[in-house]
Amino acid sequence: MLPPPHLSQPPPRPLNVSCQERCGTLKGMIVSRPGGLPAAKGSGLLFALATLACIAGIAASYYFFVHTTTGQYIDESALVEAVEIHGPAGKATTRFLDLLPGISLAIAAVVVLFVTLARRRWKAAGITVASCAVANFATQMLKDWFPDRPFTGVQTLELNSLPSGHTTLAASAAAAVFLVVSPRWRPLAGFLGGTFAVAAGVSTLINQWHRPADVVAAFLVTGAVMLPAGWLVMRSGNRWNVWDGHGEHWASSRLWLGLSVLAGLLSAAVAVYSLIRIAPAGLGIPGAAQEESTTNYFWAGVSLIVITGYLGTVAATWLFGHAARRRS
Image (cartoon, rainbow, N blue to C red; front, top):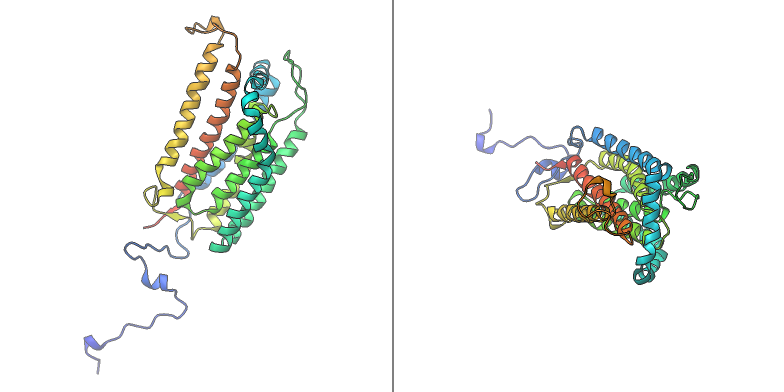
C-alpha cells in the first residue's frame, strides 16, 4: 500500500553533491556550478588576434623608428628635447626609476601571493609568474638580437635600446595583478596598472634612458606574452572567472574605462597640436612651421606612450570582461 502523498519523502541526494549544487542559484547570491560553460564563444580567436597584433606592432615600431629616417628623427628629437624637461622633473623621475624594480616586484608579489593563498588560485599564479619571467627575458633577448641602429642621416647613438627593460618590468607586474584578480576587480586593476606602466615609460624618456619607441615596444612585448597567459588563466580558472558586468561592484565601474579613454584622447590632442606646430609648411596646415621645436617632439613622444599604454588598458579590460562568464 502506497503512503499518502503528504508523507512521501524525496529520494535521497548523493553525499558527494555540494551544497552549491543542491541549492543552485539564490536570489542576491548567484553561484556558478562547477563544470559550467567555458569562456565566451570566440574569445580564443580574439586573444590570438590581439597577440598577433602586438607582434605586428613590435615589428612595425622597430622598422619605422629604427630603419627609417623619419622615424629615427622623431624618436631622437623627443629624446634630445627631454633635456628641457629633465631639470624640474629629473630628480623625482630618477628616484622613481631607481625604485621601480623593487616597487614592481613588491606589488606583483604581494598581490599574487595574497590572492593565491586567499583564493587558492595556484594555476593562475603559476601561469602569471612564468609569463612575467618570459616577458622580461624576451625584452632582453630582443634588445640583444635586434641589430644596432643603422645610420640614416640622423645623429644618434647606434646602440639598440628597443624595447625598454624598465617599462617591461612595470607593465608585466601590472599585468600579473590584472590576471590573478577576479573579473570584478579587473577594470580598476587595469586602470591603476596602466597608469603605473605609463608613468614608468614616461620617466625613462624624461631621464633620457629610452626613446618613445622603446617604451611602446615594451608595452607590445608585454601584451604579446601576457595575452596568451591570460587566455590560459581564463581556461584554467573557469570557476572564478565569472562576474555580473560593470554594475556589479565599484571596482567594475565603467568609470575606470572612461578615465583611460579620456587620458588617451587628451594625449592624442596634445600630439596633434605638437606635431602641427612643427609640420612642414608644404602640408598647408594653418599655423604650421611658425616656430622651431623646443619641446614639441618631446610632448608628441609622451603622448605616443600614453596613448599606447591606455589603449592597451582599455583593450585588455574589454577583452577579459568579454571572455569572463556571466552569472545567470
